[in-house]
Image (tube, rainbow, N blue to C red; front, side):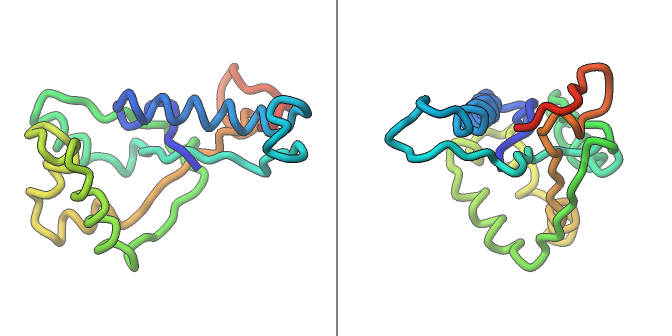
Length: 147
């Protein structure tokens, strides 16, 4: 699990995406990291994503401060996970990320300003895109290549 290639627009998240993808590929190549043990192939790699049809509230929040939400097409949102049971923990974790909550234009700060019912509705589902190229639409699809 990692971020999608957009990384929520945050450079650290984009880099995390790149590192996880590279690590998943390297894990299957014998000799790359001998101290890590035998090579293995990840069954799947997923990136957190925002599907367009489910992102209107977040997009509007960011637009209100001159920012733009980077979304994926709905057909790239391969998994939706209902996280309502963990919303208190999720919100606490987001709010504990001081570098993100102190900025007046940050998404966590904008979410914190919403009434709890609206914030919970926005945060209730996590979406993921499978990063294996076989599952991505469009001409960049590479049949048979797995991560």
